[in-house]
Amino acid sequence: MQTVAVDAMGGDRAPSEVVAGALEAAGEDVRVLLVGRPGELEAELAAHAASPHVEIVAASDVIGSSDEPAAAVRSRPDSSMVRACRLVREGAAGAVVSAGPTGAMLAACLVHIGRIQGIHRPGIAVPLPAQGAPCVLIDAGANPDARPEHLAQFGAMGAEFASDVLGVEGPRVGLLSIGEEASKGNQRTIEAHALLSAAPGLIFAGNCEGRDVLTGEFQVVVADGFAGNVLLKGLEGAAASMFAEVRRAAGSSLRAKIGGLLLKPALVGLRERTDPEVYGGAYLLGVRGLAVIAHGNAGRRGIANAIRYAARGLEADVVGRLGRQASAATPGSDLQAAAEVNTVPGVASPETGDRSA
Figure 1: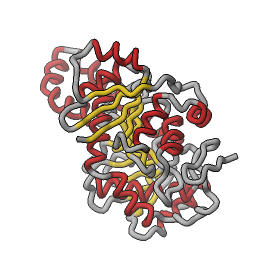
Figure 2: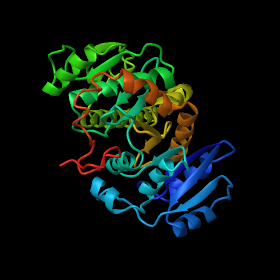
Figure 3: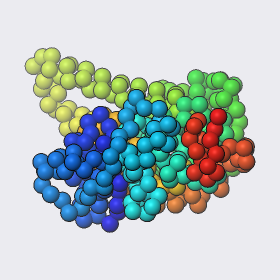
Figure 4: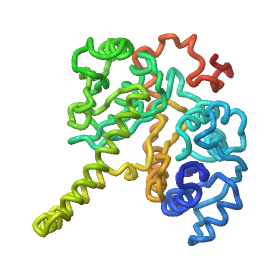
């Protein structure tokens, strides 16, 4: 049985939807530790059928979206997010899931779980519904100011994830940019292009423009957290708008309604493939424990799928695979390694205890 710690107070719809999602995901193969304020969680659990596979772990505090991430993680040791991450460090849980603020989750994972040796910065890896095989977008929001060597490591981690976990044979890696030529993009992108091109064992296919992300030409798309998150939210918004327009068009006339009924089975499948709640969350690759960052607005279905996604990651040994392979094969892993002891401003490195300026 896989044990997953869930930040029950994190997210726009916590704790009600988080508790409901946890009960949906819990079962013979998955044990859920709901971390949060016991009184509120007990009240939510009382509204559902009891489950022997769901337990409450007390935490008195909550980190909100208005809190400064690093300061909140340092000053609130009994927050639900920090307590959930500590359960992974202590071995009481194999994975942690949170729909709370991404920056705080990143800081909590770094301080209380730590990085894989040789990895400078963890990256959020999101599988996208590209044509053919899935396309892994990394980083989708953890590192807005990533450096070229960080982008190179994202490419290596993304390729390992696509190959070993998603089963993509020989994943082609692309670098998100504003043109196909190696000279296009800002200075960071140009330098990252050179590092990725020289990376041994990596199938680097060059720059990837935004319009080509879902074409199937690339199975890994590398971006800094700013551009990656803008791309991800843009794709989510475009998908939602497209389906809204399809529904409007399908009800515009009798002929359209008949056609809509005929197309409905195919459209349902397409909607399922593009729904962010299908995976429920994304792995934070590069930390020493399995962490899943769920959508801040996730409902019970999204939370349930995030927990299942965490359990599948434990079964697939995602962290172990990256620890054994990605850090050793990562291009630029020795670049500034001695100087870089922190990954988020103001957050203590779990390996050194130092703080960045």
